[in-house]
Image (cartoon, rainbow, N blue to C red; front, side, top):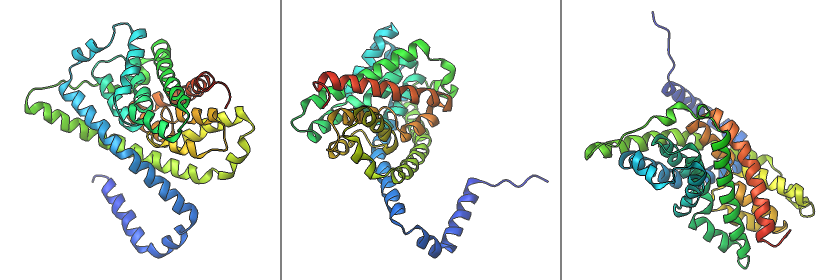
Length: 325
């Protein structure tokens, strides 16, 4: 006699039935301002990110179906030290956010691109594309230095991380499934590969997007708004806390400039660090990277990226903003 196996569908039905039976007490217990705020943040994060995640998986499918490894190899210099900055500058031509860049970077690795170049593109694409830079200019009118500093700090973060990975990174830190190459077929076979790749990447990345959105919602409620009031006169502390706040809030890179602009009590420098760190590493992106590249990768890549982005953002701000502002 075989053992009883409980499937995910059965668990879902059980949870749904319990929710229906306990509808009134659940509604009363969850009808609080904190829960409403958390729900709003969760929906906002997912709604902001989902269109760009869909764009990313569509690009991922197109790369898998129609772009050969040989073609990709011809686009980059053979030397990794030169391929990294070229891959970083390539991120400027793709409007999208960090959610879109993860599946694209995964597909680039599976198609034979050097890991360092693909990871550089992953960090650069959501941070220096035209949509993000225009949004920053609109959010900070009369402060063109913020646009220049954001571009320099974000590109510097991507290139430095690419060079660090080429020097110290190990292939085994990236999950083996990422390197399974999908060979383009011909005719209808190419479209079949496109559909299957896009479907697989959307299901895989979408679940971790939800997980990241839940984490962001909980942490948004747990961070008191009054903390920001006492940071204006403590520059180093404000830089560190704004970097951590960028990780916690998990904002889309197309919208974070307006959030930073609203924090007028803080100097420009910590707000710039917020803008450089956010597209490079946050709880949502950490969840997506864990699900896509593996936990061993994310546990090493995310903390290093946080440190590098904070330093690059600070350096870019000191140079482009004319000192501490």
